[in-house]
Image (tube, rainbow, N blue to C red):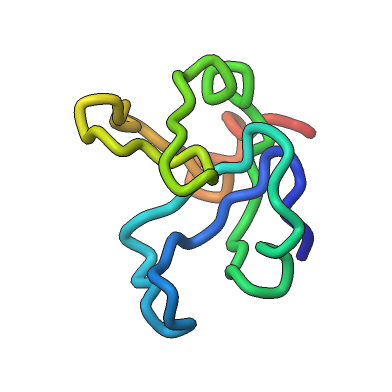
Length: 92
């Protein structure tokens, strides 16, 4: 899948089998094309992208990574629509 706005990927080191799923990222701008077919994408954000796009951007490695851990903003809550009761699921 291409690294389009809102896609969620698994961060990894240089070796292809180093991604554990413990570190995820979301594309909030223009992603370098070399990420396509090289980094696993696992989904996409369909609600809340305005909040993610408002976060400060890092400049580590030219990929927007935070070089200083203090800049990281923890995600406190994620809800999968499939985990909600049918009556509470948003209709997209």
